[in-house]
Image (tube, rainbow, N blue to C red; front, side):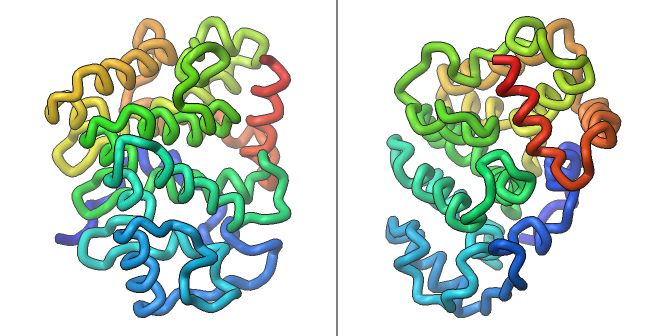
Length: 268
C-alpha cells in the first residue's frame, strides 16, 4: 500500500522550513540513513528498544533518525511502533525524548526543536494513521495524553497521570488564551485542532478510531478537547489551514514556533 496524498490539515501542521533544515544537529550537515540502518532501527523498536544510543548506526545520524526511520512497507515511524506497545506511555515517552537529543543545544521552544517534534508527531503511515490514531485505537489513554501534551510542548506531558490544571487538555479558547492577540489564539488553537482532527485514509479522526474500537472514554477525552478549543464551531477542517497560514506571516520567519511558545507561556 502506498502512502495517501497529503491532507490539507497535514500540510498546515508541517514546519515552515524543510525537514532537512529543521532537523540538523546544531546546524551541521545531516546524513541520510541507509535502508540497512532503517531496518536495524525498526527491528530494535519492534523489540521494545527505542533508545538511539542502542542503535548500531553512524554516530553522525541521530539528529534525524526518528524522522527518517520509516518502514517502507507500512509507512510506520518509530513512534507508531511505540504507540502500539502497552497501556503505559513509557515507550512513547522514550521516543519523544529523543527529539530533544536530535536537537541538542537548541532552546526548548526553538523553531528547530519544535519543528523536529511536530514532524515526528504528525507523520502518517500508509493507512493515513498518525501516532495519535494508533494510541487511540489501542485505547491507551496515558499514551494519548502524552502525545497530545507533547504536541502542545508543555511540561505536563511528563506526568500523564496528573489531570489537574494546567494540563493542556483543559485549555479553553475563551479562558486560557484571553491575554493573547486574537490571531495568536487562532494559531495555537487551530494547530492543536488540526492535530486532533487529522483524518486517516478512512476519513477517521483519532477520536473516531477510538470509538470504533470500543474505547469510548478515550474518544470522549479527545472530543472534549476539540470542544474546548472550538467554541461555537469557529474552526472547521476546511478553514483551519487558512487560519494557520494567515497567522503564520505575523511571526518572524526564522523563529515562528519560538514566538508562539513565548507569547503563550507569558500569558499563563
